[in-house]
Image (cartoon, rainbow, N blue to C red; front, side, top):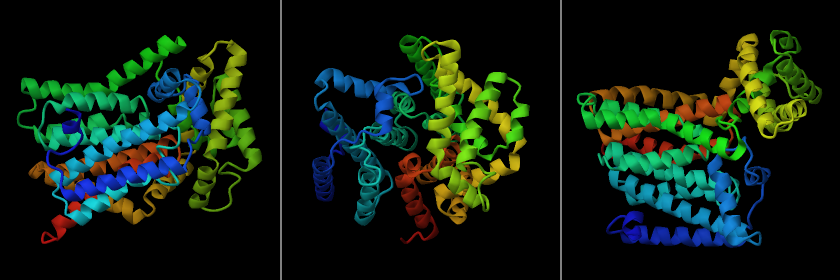
Length: 431
């Protein structure tokens, strides 16, 4: 049963050779690189209120089963195995649905395996990417089955993986509404039939269901019915960077004003603000990008938690209060510095795409594929529409929430490759 789930029914000789090579590569990587304990590892391991639950529970379950000695080796093994399963499944679906030639199949597999090499080391590094990437690949697999191969039963698998993925990394919460929109386009003439409407409703309810599970976890473990409180702490970092000293007068709440003043004083003294940056928006973004951890994690977040813990003395509530403060400060700072904010924000988006031309191509492809899918729904048109939407919305959300580093963007590299292949086929059919 597991073998049938893992691979296509009659794998070709090429696929057997390719995945034998992948297993060999994973074994070599496991042998050469010991488990990497990064600062994030310790943060997840302590199951704090500001971390999504799945990866924290993943780490702690391995410690419980294998004990303190060398349990990290078993985590790395599990992350390699999960990666192999995710890669195998999404590779099989893409090769089958898009009829990829052997050389394109090899390129696709290389792109899928690339995150396991430096600099990401996603299986060796004990961070959430080691689990989130395989879950993302599984999600795309089941999305292809549900939307493009018209396998209704795969909606259940899709829903379970979506919840696990979003409770590992919250940046993917927008995916369910996007899948729902593609489903509406596909079923627009029969979307309100009982079965179709129930599926559509489930897709739209998935983000709320995920939020409910997240809040329930924190209620049980930390005593507070709240969503993981770290989104606005990250998102307020760019507004803090572009802010000015006089913006403090617009913050009425004295606690929030104190947090802003203390945080801004630190980064201003270090030269990590727009006001102390010489150069254009690009230079400003580079300063922000290079010092994001200092502006956010080691500054605003730490100061906020220390301040509210000293004031209220309630464990875990300090992180929640810091999130509430960040949420309140964010629109004030953006409203006071809109031009500076959007200049630096746009540079962050461009940094993720490496060029305004690449960004422009994806926007054009989004609009064109939307028009084509409305006129003629097909697996290729729908995938291009869905893929470009995933790529653009993820880039916009990452740019809003933090800074556009490869660690947050690599999930969609293989989708960009497939979009390129399908687009070239449409432009030059003989290829």
